[in-house]
Amino acid sequence: METVATNIRIDKQLKEQSSQVLEGLGLSLSGAINMFLRQVILQDGLPFKVEYPKPSRSLKKAIKEGEKLIKDPKAKTYKTPQELWDEIGL
Image (cartoon, rainbow, N blue to C red; front, side):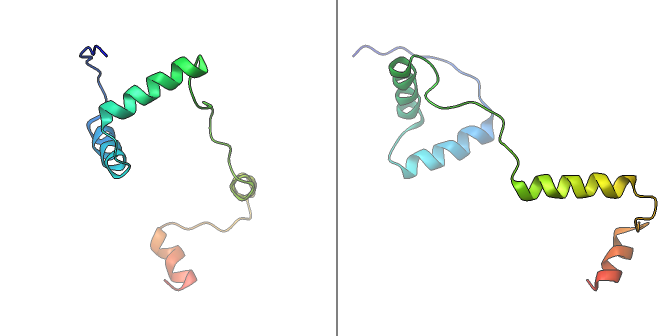
C-alpha cells in the first residue's frame, strides 16, 4: 500500500486528548484517521449521524421553569450569590 503525507490542522488539545484515548485502544492517530476514511468510503458518507444533541426531558423542564420565573414579577431574586447561599445554608 502506497502512502502519502497529509497535513491537517486540528486544535492542539483535541489532538492530545484524542491521541490518549486512541492509545488506550491500541490505535495511533494516523491509524484512526485511516480507519475513519475507509468507513467514509464504505458508507459513502460520514460513518455516523451528525446532529445537534437533543436536550433531556429534565433539561427542557428546567428551561421552561427558568423562563417562567424570569417573567414572574413576584419571583424571589438575590443581589449576590452569597445572599442565595446564606438562605439555603451553604
